[in-house]
Length: 406
Image 1 (cartoon, rainbow, N blue to C red):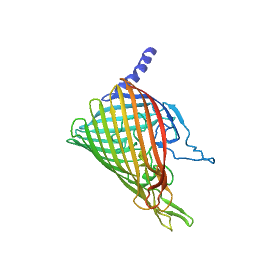
Image 2 (image 1 turned 45 degrees about the vertical axis):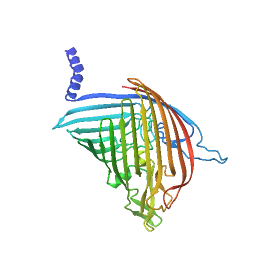
Image 3 (image 1 turned 30 degrees about the horizontal axis):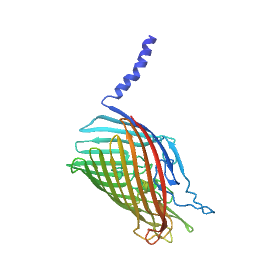
Image 4 (image 1 turned 45 degrees about the horizontal axis):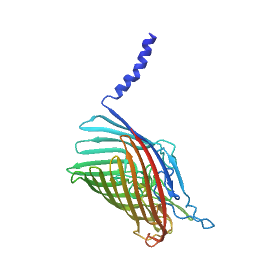
């Protein structure tokens, strides 16, 4: 009798598992990744230096020595990733699916904890898809093929956020409409980086775009984007505290293309970006008016022209070349206060050249990448928001990469 009961107990979890899997399919995937890097100076590089963006400006000590002109480097494996793709039973005429994806990169200042990279459910009809959850931001779109974890940032938007997205296929054109919120990638403001600015706004980010496939191998597309933030809800003045109704609204546009050949690809993107600092692109906003009684503020976004090109050649041995350029175009209105909120707003222009070579097998990738980046730092003009009296700062970065994919 005891043996029979033990047998039932042993079989029960297996039966439950089979019942849970009915009408479902599961596919695990991921990789183990190691990044070994060296920089010739200090940089803006979140995730403990793995997510490289651009060099820091000079910081001179009392003797006139540049504190930031100090080499650094390390080796990390916390970007190792694990994902799960699921398909489920039909809902009417719609196919159902879901994705859960994580790594050990944490968020905020933590790199020792699991974080959500992607987590969403999707409903697919013949020509329409509805996606609900966290995935790539619509502006990320076409990504360059590079070894660096930042994947083209700060020239290409890099962001995964909670969103509601609808896509519709019309002949050779795919239309996209998405409403986006913020969580791990947040806008800057008076209280630093926070999701409260868009939460208090009551209006999510709105993205509208299309992709067109005119012939085999080709992809052409464009999109428009709006963000509307409430930087503050209360103003602290000497005469007292005042409830304020502030709003910063900015619009951006982008165009992209990609061609995939037999053993090579070419991709490019250009953007007119405004207040996209939460997507790892240079940008932000400043103050254009202050009410003298209540302290209520009006804001003006910075505009940046940002472009990149990427060419890859080969399959087993793959060579890649990436080049990016970003230019500060200033603000629409004059600034009336020195406080500005965003990323790299005192950079006039930023240039990056990035060649790499990798050796690729069925489940292995080993590669090396050299990155030359130059940032032209200066002083922000209050009248225009542009940067004057710029001087160059250059960093040399070498990256060694090993990835085992499963």
